[in-house]
Length: 317
Image (cartoon, rainbow, N blue to C red; front, top):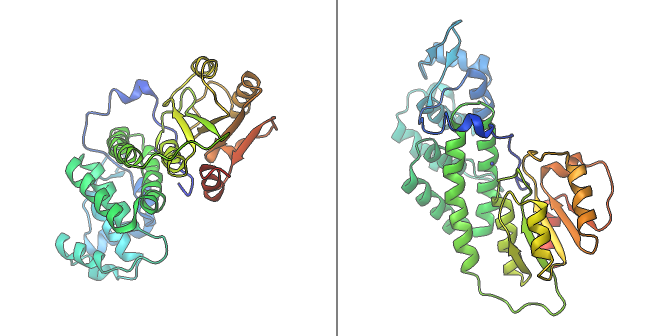
């Protein structure tokens, strides 16, 4: 669930998910709000007392707890506050006025926080039509590739922070991911197929057993197809046996995977050792935030540590 390499927190175990994904209301502590909005807990308490921004409920021990509506409102406040607007003015605005003010905020460089927050709001409400409309407009405004790296990856990173709350967030992450994956598949199928390069790469894309995040891998597949690199996508959560079965009957030069979370039954180094030993004649290519945790060196292993390296590989370099 940036990029920019995508980086998210580890998901809640499957046993826990089935008890929470059907409930649409989340509850956040003041520390959660601090992490998600970038507003210090001490500052938030002062704002609540002085401007009555929100009225959090109280749990046992008198601890504050916030719901989805509180979070959405504070995300808007945070965005405008961090772009120079005084809290005394913001506290007096209604939702429509705040939205109009947000649209006037210039977006320097690759900062697209307003789009990211809009996607997050739609995800929290499970609003399929709104999410799809926002994503469509972002792509029209920025182009497909800039939308993925400049908005979607940072959005998923923010969703990753929501995983840390331990609440019902997996449902929103799955909801958003499904809609993003749909856009990726449509965009990939819409590319004109280039003729295979003579003697070129045959790349097998997959995520290892225990890794279910597909978006970075599907985006790499899109980039490779655009550049005329021949690929086959096996999907997520793929075991060694399935890889061996495919490679025994089809030509493959490269095995490529992207790790977001470490849910392997072994350490990444141990997995790479098994993979390189199982496919001695093929190049193994790995990307993702967990590349930083590798300790060993392996024959025919190519590690992509930056967005530039991923782009170079996707272009066939």
